[in-house]
Each structure stands twice: as structure tokens, then as C-alpha cells.
Length: 210
Length: 210
DNA sequence: TAGATTGTTAATCGATTAACAATC
DNA sequence: TAGATTGTTAATCGATTAACAATC
Image (tube, rainbow over all chains, first blue to last red; front, top):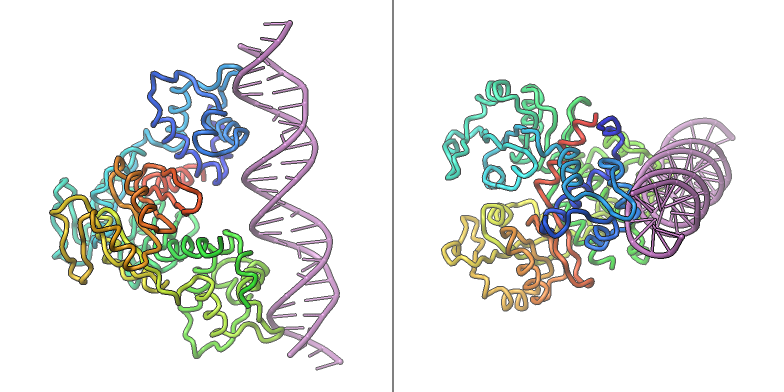
């Protein structure tokens, strides 16, 4: 049932949350089953694309009937790992780091944003939702005790590489970097560089092209 | 010189900020010129890809010599619109909205994050960097007076569509939506849906696949 | 001239779309 | 059975890579 999991290409993987979210917006009793044509129409995608994508992670549609709603949701959640609890820490407790620490929606995909860490002792403490901010020297012990898998970097530009090195040293497997510095890293750790400013620049440039 | 601007495909456009950032990390006097091979090596890309990308926006390299550093930076900044001042507002002055309002890096690409707007009167006021938060009823007048081109939506899930409609009505041309709701919109406004939680889920799923 | 580097043309690769056979 | 819908095979499209000619 899961054997073909590692064949899902990235382009497909990125559409899975979109399918899942769309299904969740439908009232469950109104549709025990749903067709690829319906999903495609609701999302403005091709129906063959929807079928091919779903075949990769679910593969249990029935001709004339469509897909079982619940089965689809289950498999999508499974493929996205929503049912696993994945522990995450934040390095850098500035405004963005704190925003992530308070952001509820991560739980929907199984993430527990456990705590934030910062060099600045004045930033330590506790947010209104109970999430804590520690000094950075507590990071390693915390990651090891709590089996932290993912680190989010929200430090200023100059500190990003050392934050990355530190997280790798703490054993995290993936890093999501919001500092403008592009990180260099060992190949067994997955790094995604997310540059907010340049993303907006791309959006803005697409606008002018039109 | 600009006539082929509208032919830059999205895949290329997304690499332009990466080239620009890489060039800026080099000390300018150390390289008056730079070759595609050097850029490719520095970024882990193919050198033909670099040449093709650069040809689309600069197109002025010289055999045996390479590209003029300054010319490259100029054309990249031009293609990305860094030299234009583009006015941006934020709708939703929660933690994420405030984080964007204080984030410096947008200026590097010519953006002026002018102000934020919120339904909640208690959130109005001024941040330490002088940026102001107004009530939402001030939005339309502000956008028209200041010629606001882009809106960033950082409201809770249920309010995103009405925030979008409002921004469209205020005349913005592009919307960057951080609410989990996927927005429906008129075709003459460019909308980018950015779902932080699902992006992290994709990163996490890629990790398991490996 | 010879060598380094660009820019272009052709080949490859992967993703999307179209056509259609299978099936409930 | 007939019609609706899935899943697969082939065709198309776009992006990347390879080969190579042009040129300073």
C-alpha cells in the first residue's frame, strides 16, 4: 500500500495539500464519494492530472462511482504525514519567529512547534499560548530529548549559517531557512531556503510581464 | 533592450534573485567581470543554464571575458524591478502581519511596506520603526492616495476572501495570501496563495521519501 | 594564433495533456 | 446494456542539458 510512496514527484507532492484542503472544505455528508472531474472543476486543474496525482497516493477510485471521500482524505493525510507527530523548533525569536510559534495551522499537518531559541536572553520567556523561548545554549539538549526533526531559522542574515550548523549538529533532518543567506549544508540534511523578499519580487515581476 | 522582457518564463524568473544575491556576496572590486562557469559553480547550477538565463535578461556577455559584473547586477535589478518603488499594504495586523511590517529586507527589491490595516481597533497604532496600523475602513482611501500595487493578506482563515475582495476593490494588482483559504479572484489580479503549514508538510514529506 | 568563454542549435528529460480502453 | 468514470498508453509541451559553432 505504501510501496510506491517514494515515487511521488515534487510537482505532485505540492498539489496534495491543495487536494486535501479542498476536500475538507466540502461538507462530508454531502459527498461520500467524489469524482476527479468534480475536484478538477473546484480547483481549476485538469481532471486527468487529478486522477494521475491521486493514483500515485490513493489509487482506489471506482469507475462510475469515483473516489471514496474518506479514503481519499486518509491517504492524502497519510502521504503528507499529517498523522505523525513531527517536532519542530525555531531558532531566532524575533517577530517572525514568534509569529510561527503562535501559528495554529501547523498542527493540521501534524507539526508541533515546540519552542524557540535565541541568543538574546531578554527574549526568553513564555508566549500567551504557553510556548517557551529559551537561550540558544539549551538547543542541543532540547533537540535530543524531544527528538526534534525540523528546524526553522528566523535569525538575521549574518547568523543564519551558524544557526544552520548548530541545528545540523543537534540532529535535525530538515531546515527551513527564512534568512536571506543561502545556506550551505551537508547532503543528508534537507534545506529549503525561503526568501520572503525575493518571492515578493518574483510576484511583482510576473505582474509587470502580463 | 527590454523588448524581450515578457518572454522570461517563471522558472527563470525565480532564479534571478538567486543570481543577484550571489553577485552581491562577491566583493565588487575583486571581480569587474564574472563568467557563467563561476556563477554556476558558486550556486551548484549548470553553466549553460546560467548563460541561458542571463541571456534572457542581460545578453551582453563577451567571449573569453565573461559578463560585466556591474552590467549584470543592473540588468538583474532591472528585471526584478528593484529600482521601482512599489507600494505594499498589509491586511491583518496579527503577529505575522506585524512581522512583515517590520521586516527590512523588502526594501532591497524596491518595496515599501507602507502600513497595515486591521478590523480590531485595539491593534491600531505605530510600531517602533514608525510603520502605522490603521483600521480597515481607512484602506481604500489609503490605497488610492498612495497608489498601492500589492496587498499582503495575513488575516485568519475565515476573513481572507473578504480581505481579498476588499483589496481588489481598492485597486491593487497583486495579492500575496498567507491565509490557508485559497482565494478565488478576478483574472486581472494576480494572486499567490502561500500556505505556510502545507509548505512545511511538503518539506517534511520530501524528507521521508529520501 | 590558440584558448577561453559566450550563445545557439539539437537532444534529452520530465511533466502535462489528450485519446482511449477497461469497468462498474 | 448504456453511460459515467477510472486508469493507462501515447502525444505534446516546456525546461534542462549536451554538443558545438562563433568570437574576442
